[in-house]
Length: 261
Image (cartoon, rainbow, N blue to C red; front, side, top):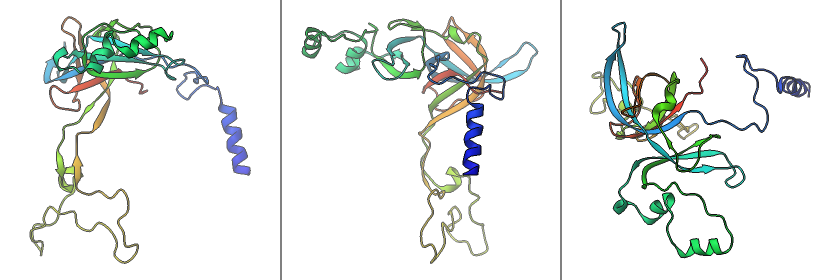
């Protein structure tokens, strides 16, 4: 009881106080403002030279333009978010639900809902999009407006999320950087094996989380705190320092980092 009361007193004493880095603590129920965010496609890597002659390895990202497809609200959807789309998809390849998501289509269900007085969602009135994602937070945008890479003109660092390259079913040396077995001294035809994976009679099982062969890659990966080197608004290009997950041509999401320091 003593430790619990002390802990409760510590929590209540710090409730609403300033954080360690000098910023005011977030109040309960305060709405989050969406940071500069955009969708794009990884073009590839290259290097550029700064004014002092320093060579910087950069990844080129085709960022935007991204139409605003939907604006989520607390009253209607239960959360605040902005839904963006990237890269037009030919109508002949888009299914009816994808076309109806961005443009108004005449349907029996829509007519019935209108007759009953149900307010239909506003449409962006654009082409179907290949890549659609939502970003949490409140933003002063409307459905149908277009977001460009200009919003990152004053941004110094970003977080980039993409799908890493798939490596298939890989062994422990490739997947977990195991050293493998010895080349000689009785080791035959099992040089890349993992070795023992657990105990014998006790506990007679393999513990959860044991590193073993399995699917490697093809997973959502986020690289944080990348420096923004250059913003080319004319060509919708964003240059960031370092590598970005995924192959050339893969879709990525770019968002201003929330990492402090």
